[in-house]
Length: 234
Image 1: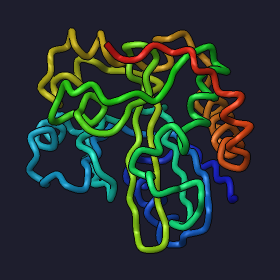
Image 2 (image 1 turned 180 degrees about the horizontal axis):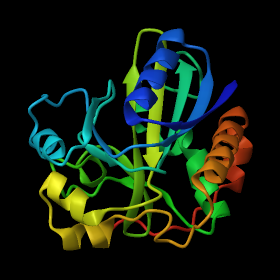
Image 3 (image 1 turned 135 degrees about the vertical axis):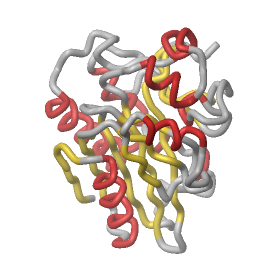
């Protein structure tokens, strides 16, 4: 499996690199560091989505993903990770739409090594606009605090499963973009800095890449190493 450390890239470049990897189809794990403030929209959202209008008013770039879900606010320093596998790869499985814990096991291990007990849990159903507070799929959560999420694009040949882990946080901006109370954002969202992880994004990205690759190359060992002691969302 190829391993790619992308460095600091804009959200638009990050999305473009993921889509290129999907077209190529070679098994790959990739981690980048986002360099700009931007909003990404899921494939099913219209260009005139309310969050997109608000983002444009704030001077944020608006980027379209080929994966599902709704809007995600991206901030400089956030970690963007992706996995591309052949559609027939047994690690994908027939239940690929529920494969957050399997394909994202390395993210859980990465957080545990930083002292953050986390896991993939059902999305909280608190917003129709904010993907990480949404009603579909699973999110990466440390207790009630959501750190990130993931989404997929399946083609006839390959699957792209990609996600983001927040490092910084701007709850006031996120609340305004997605029209949710700031108090809700402060209670339910967090970045690694808020949880006491002070290492540079460059160092974190390198470690995340290693943990994701290991979990995919030896899923049995990764499952044995991955802690199960996290609190679900309440």
